Length: 244
Image: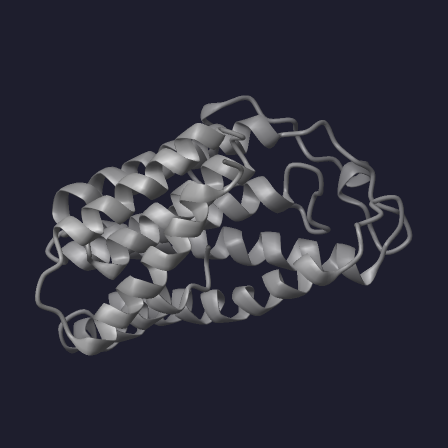
């Protein structure tokens, strides 16, 4: 998910590389990197906290709102300020598509039940399915506890699923089987298929195929890239056996 060390490593490297000829793209990449770094810590906190009680204002509710807000900001940065300008960077294009799917993954996990306190508007591309309009009563306030809206879970999950399919397609076509970014895409896609889509067979299939392709196409790479690839292959091996 957002916050992967491999993703952050490539983000930081490309933010420096493109700065010499595209300062605005570099700035956007650094902002996405910053959001990713903060989000990774908040996601860990969210997993450790008790089950959220949406009937009253709590710290955990504020944490969920902040996670949703940052995911929205990251999605917009990628969609508007990154993806249109990375056609000449194969790795960066795959990474941007993967991170876009990752931010949508967060929406599936955190926003299918809860609304942000602010007047939350969805990024471009989210409006291709009917959405229930947010109202002050639904959004909540300092004095008004948050009320659960009609779930928009399946609206998000369909869009996120398509984003993962797109990222996976580009990663498969453009990167070698052992490339860390390709393996990163496969790993999160497998996790998303298992945890959100409940497509357990698909999840194991994605992971098994990624492991097979990684070993079949091992090529010369730096020690650091090799270690990253082996860590991801190990995680994919766990996903391939999950629930079997």
